[in-house]
Image (cartoon, rainbow, N blue to C red; front, side):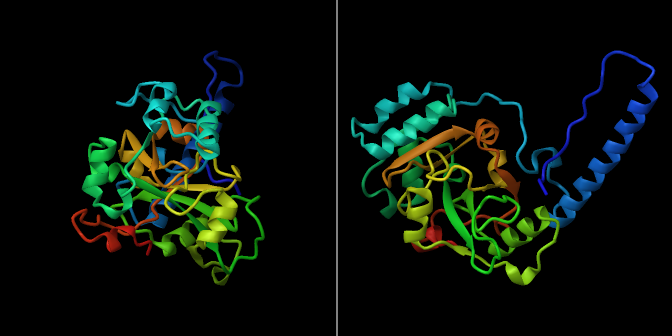
Length: 279
């Protein structure tokens, strides 16, 4: 079952079918309201803009403060190019991510605080820093990722200042497959570094949806990222980071949007062990 919000298209010309079309429009609106209600109940939230929640769908792209072209920011790689960076840049161009910024950060980036990392990226706040993790359903009956509503793997993207909740991932995936599979067949855990490398093509701390080895692996983007104009994530190498416009990312990668983190934010002044923990 593909989980996405439907759109209505109403003819601008009045015809004899107008009453029937109006009735269909009302019916679809009612169905949409039911979907919205179910989503709110599923997430336990009534304050979320439902128009932004759902699965793959086309959306309008909005401008934000990242406006320079990709070619401009290739220079920020400090002249260090290899097979991985070339793959990333190729994917950026193929996806027409003209909002993308790609830069190389200091070698001790992950040994330093989030505030230090924020300054390296010239990000407005630590909330703009995100990570991508490959999650595996260790009790699933699926053997691959061909069915996005019941996949062996999901690539989740969320903020460093939040903590991932595997229970919420399980509930969301059960919802999008219509609860057709027993709860006992779901247990999401972080894929091992070796398995993640094999599936994504990237090492630990370098995983990104851009240029991923298997591009059809379903992506789940934290709904909190929608509040940002753009966000930073891994760039294929440990010391490379990529920023992209949120709406442009959604338009090109068609991620599911879901509440997949615990409530509240982690204090960026806390120790690095807490900031880099998964669960």
